[in-house]
Length: 273
Image (cartoon, rainbow, N blue to C red; front, side):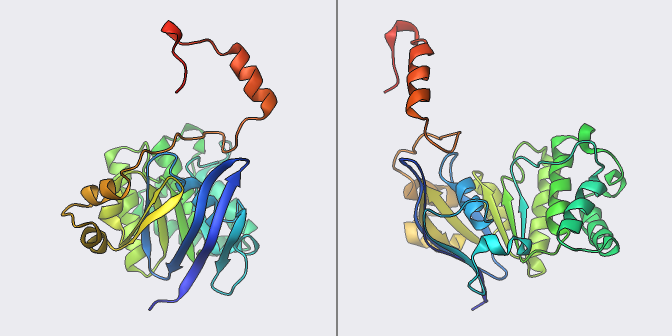
């Protein structure tokens, strides 16, 4: 069995009274290309933030292979958030180089690694351009190069193809597939089941803050007695999905009162059920 790189043990994450994740157990092994699949609000982004050390679990642990808590060794992780967070006044290469320097990577090493992956993403000629005028696809590719420049052990991708055109999305998927073939480890969060099926050798389905299934696509079909992964997903997530909390935390009593006072009623007197 391949060595484990990242472990989640009984991790629960609460925001006030809201339970975003409930008792998550997950082991990420070397060479896994994991499709983290779930609807909007299922808990995918919260889980990725736990895995990257941005959040700490309310209970439970997230640890690396040596037993260290993940927030103490973030340099071993590469992260592409849904919002790329690039500096618009810097060129693509300057954004990448800044990130590399923070991780102690020499400029020449960073450039060679960036150039290698940029060729696969058709980004070489854009490295000297300021990111302010970049399309969403170009920003996403730059963020991907930035996440790879320090040679992380695990790459975490949050909706990496969301909003991309067909060609850009396909390029990103091809790179993820190549990383897998080279022995890389990737967690690929998406609500598009077809995306996960194209590139991942393992599917983790998360729904309402719980892991509902974890295994190869073939194992999930056998578990659910279905013939298509979409049917398997539907059978595992048949209960009603909870509403998405965009703010990550519940409103304070003052904010709740203020909103109730000034939010107009819908026509006909209807109110939220």
